[in-house]
Length: 412
Image (cartoon, rainbow, N blue to C red; front, side):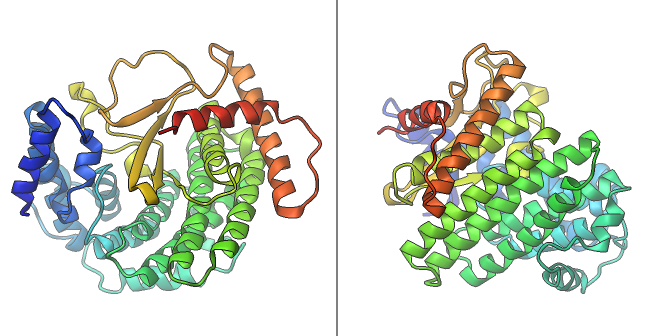
């Protein structure tokens, strides 16, 4: 079926009395190439969304041109005024929160390499840029913080660009299964190296700026998402048996919880909530039920805060915090997390689940933080029992209540 006919079929589904696909799910079902995403998006939704989507498509086309040819004029004054690193940022963040990225791996790698070398990237095409990036990141030893990262501490923009490079390589690792799995494993390992280095660098600093705290939070999430992606891909590639996968899964999860506790003093309540919730989802849907049927992923930066220009026009939000996949049922759930139960002035798009009932309602910020820290501590104790056999004798009241709410939200 052509893209145009597929769009028409899905639009009919969306407007029929028996709605079977929500809007994000319908868009995710499209199989077009990544660089026509905004065109498909606009055709699917129509109206004011289509007008903005067409503007986004024109801008992304110009950004793609300059990403590959930094000195080339596109006729778009905004795009032509950007530095190569800012082009890479705008391109990555504007590619679309629901874009499946089919066919994007070469451009995504180039964007990651440009962000990594920011602000030293030349205004002329550099055919060795991606190769240099792969070599430099690929030779970082585990636990080592490269000199380039140390220097970036004095340049908040460069530090944030490095973080986006780690996000982009994680996105490459998640490109659907028609891509070569070994390339996805390699990309996940690159992402792990970048994010692990950033997290170590910032965790060891006594005081962090607000920008550094954001990078700390993003690098921690992406480090563990890369670790979970690696063991999932290796199981798919026959490198891990199901039983070995479950052992690895629980070990990585307990490490995630421990590192979240270590970094918690440099996190806002909102960031801590996101970290806790992702770990809680992994624990509740898999470990608690002694299975490994769900895949839980943190949203990357392009999905969490997309440059889609919808907010100024009061259009629905297409951002989200967490992706939950249940492969045996072919189900995908996009989740936006909230610590409060206050109504949103701008609603999220149909099909994005808003979860705001995990924590105690109407609690103060201090009470919410205490609840999150208690939940993390109880989860760590129970996970250590699973991974080491050492019996956990503490309370499980908070974590048990939170797990029950997660399982209720995912009941058929």
